[in-house]
Amino acid sequence: MSDLEDDETPQLSAHALAALQEFYAEQKQQIDLGEDDKYNIGIIEENWQLSQFWYSQETALRLAQEAIAAVGEGGRIACVSAPSVYQKLRELCRENFTVYIFEYDKRFAMYGAEFIFYDYNNPLDLPERIAAHSFDIVIADPPYLSEECLRKTSETIKYLTRGKILLCTGAIMEEQAAELLGVKMCTFVPKHTRNLANEFRCYVNYDSGLDCGI
Image (cartoon, rainbow, N blue to C red; front, side, top):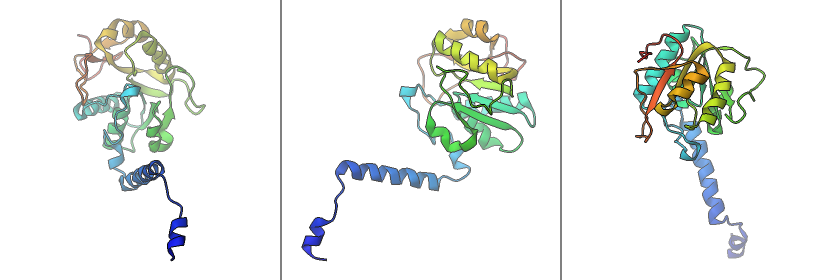
């Protein structure tokens, strides 16, 4: 090839090259992820702008085990804004119950048909295939510690559940949670992978293994 032909070869800008490299890295990550690895907590990094804070491995396991015990074999579980619980459930067992992840962050669409796009600002804007009162338990962790966010998320919870509710939110939301969902604080204290300024607690409306009713 002549020098002239070399000069005429199209060159990518630094920005375009960086974007292309990022794309190939993402593609490689998807290829490298095994069936087990893709459910690891932290495989999708926290986005603080979306108020994402993942549970610790121990907390995710405890909540997943509680959900399984609450629904029994063949049960249906909805994880609303609680992706690390969904991941732990799928890591534990993939056959004897049904679980869906309701999440705003479309990175979780990697989980296929079990991913349901969810925006708490439109609490009942759900696909037709998601019928009312079609889940044995709803595990929910509203992304923001505000009355508005809890109230709107509560609409979703009440639409989805057949009865059982496991809510994770700040201790400061205890009164509002009781008013909106009829839940009581449990003795079990959930932990996150990072230390948060606000104390978090679990709330349920049924006799649970999380020691309800302090």
